[in-house]
Image 1 (cartoon, rainbow, N blue to C red):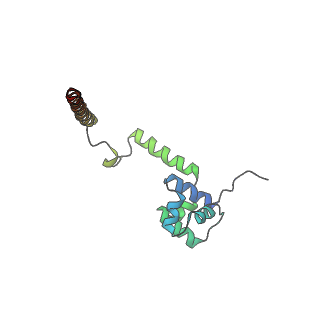
Image 2: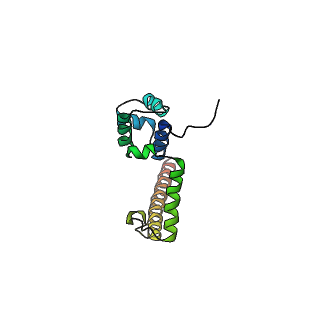
Image 3: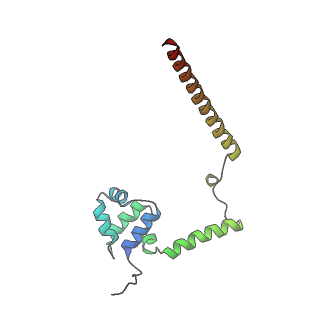
Length: 139
């Protein structure tokens, strides 16, 4: 019995892409109009017919070629290239990936909100104490 994995196991590739997209089998099943057990069978299949593969690719938001050519090594290389290029300054990241607010301002906002909450809690405790003292005096 050999423990080596076959290089072209389409089900495992689908499984890894789904996991990398942080998608559960149930979510993929819903997108394909099937159930989780069917996805499990699909991901354990070494080969899948082309039409089914097109449906899966669409549900995962990738191309059929991306599934067929998927390897862990390619994913690692992709992210390493992005990281290396950002370090070297050759990639201009989209504005949405950069902080568009002053972190100190945000910190102060959070601090002020907590301070207001603390003051309300303190006032609530004072009110309770006054009420309890009033009750004690009445007895």
